[in-house]
Length: 80
Image 1 (cartoon, helix red, strand yellow):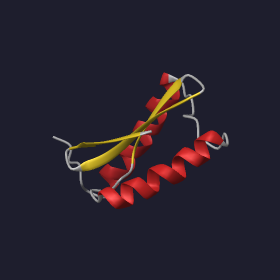
Image 2 (cartoon, rainbow, N blue to C red; image 1 turned 135 degrees about the vertical axis):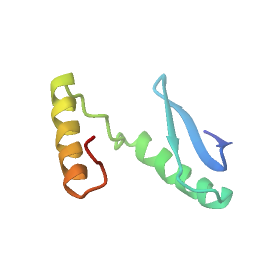
Image 3 (tube, rainbow, N blue to C red; image 1 turned 180 degrees about the vertical axis):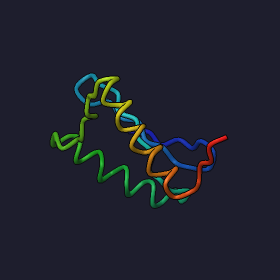
Image 4 (cartoon, rainbow, N blue to C red; image 1 turned 120 degrees about the vertical axis):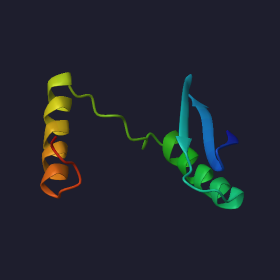
């Protein structure tokens, strides 16, 4: 397990069963990052790693259109 810093945020990288897992710790504090990465490493080893959900391009388009509709309804996007 390795910790590294990028733009003040600490990230972890670990190899599990030949797979490299990289994840943000979400903190600028090294001690908090160390605790987070130790807990996540244990979860990953137990197989509790969350996998990314695969979606189609059409589903992504639908999600974006809903997002844009809601943002526009709140007045944060103006039509020209």
